[in-house]
Amino acid sequence: MADVTIDSERKEEVLECLQDIRDRVKSAGATSSPILVAVSKYKPASDVLICYEGAGQRDFGENYVQELVDKAKQLPAEIRWHFIGTLQSNKAKTLVSIPNLHTIQTLTSTKAANLLNKALAEGPDAHRKLNVLIQVNTSGEDNKSGLSPLSSEPTADPHPLLDLATHIVDHCPFLRLQGLMTIGSIEQSIHAQEGNRDFETLLRTREALQEKLRAKYPDTTDTFGQDGRLLVSMGMSADFEEALKAGSDIVRVGTGIFGGRRTKEEVKVKGAA
Ligand SMILES: *Cc1c(COP(=O)(O)O)cnc(C)c1O
Image (cartoon, rainbow, N blue to C red; front, side):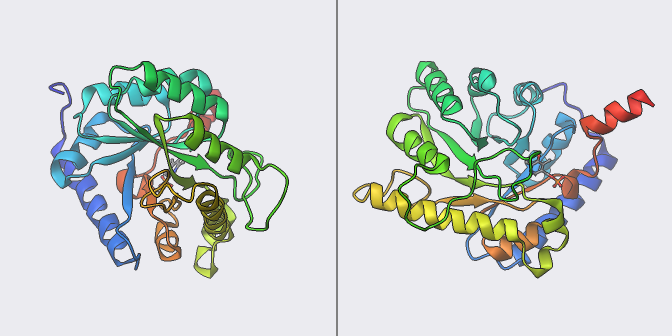
């Protein structure tokens, strides 16, 4: 931690933005107390430390395993890290090796669930439970990962989302199914004021899954979610206020706090030009 140095001008800038986002989260009219995850991908560890020390921010999100491993090593153990990137099964063990990894928001397969569970079982902290959210592809876009939404219609067919959820509860004692996450389409985000169909789809999916899980596990109030309620993670810089109004429990804000970032694609394009 000693080698993370903070620039005072940057500190002022980031803390001002974080305060603004927090104010907007507060006034968005959410019913419960939502979790603000500060998405720090591509940003230096010093930006994270600014929020941690200067504003008591504890929840941070990262998309890339190696970047998360490197930052976690340099930063306080009290940070709650959320992994929000594409989850590759072969990275399960590396992720679990981060002692303060708090939640994986992007689980989409039983294979990854099994590998995470196994790595946790073999890990040093036998009592540790890792929170997982299942990612749902609410917009149906090919470039988004996630399982298909679920409807409340009774159906005899197995559904991948229900299968994964029950697999976690039945076979992954080291994982805790906290809820569902979506990214959603940009189009829906731009027109979010008129109602975001992706948010609505995630909320409907949550209700349907919750209902089916409650029916399957009637005697166990503490098997999934928070007090038997599944949480939803939806809303980013462009649409977190709409998401909160719609009932989001977790919002993930990067640009709004840390400013713009060059994506991998931009780096590639600019590098080629
Ligand atoms: C990058 C990212 C965010 C943050 O996006 P901003 O628009 O910068 O707020 C949130 N969620 C996921 C899954 C992301 O990859």
